[in-house]
Amino acid sequence: MAKQKIDNPIWQKKEEWWYNVWKKVEPPFCPSKGEVIFYEKAVKKILKRKNPKVLVLGSTPEIRDLLAKYKNLEVYIIDADVPVYRAMTRLMKRKNKQEKLVVGDWLKMPFEKNIFDLSL
Image (cartoon, rainbow, N blue to C red; front, top):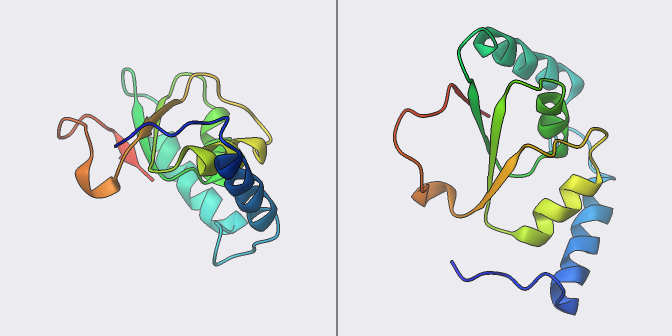
């Protein structure tokens, strides 16, 4: 995938658009509080593993906020769009400076098989 130039005005407009849209959406278009609780139960099940790794499909801020609570998780975000990732990061309550963004297609993931303990 070609690298997206972040300082390009078109990408900045796209980032602003996504930011403004996502802060207004409600379930089922974004995770409900109940869904986040469900995800948290799944996360807690893997916390006792050595170096637990989580893969998040997309940049959903609600899921990333949840994962940011747990410092021993290795978190990978796969998203095809840097402006969307940046917009969703701005909407997070907790920032996770350790999460890693992989720009790519969910259907062509650049990971070895079975390296993640949980995918959300």
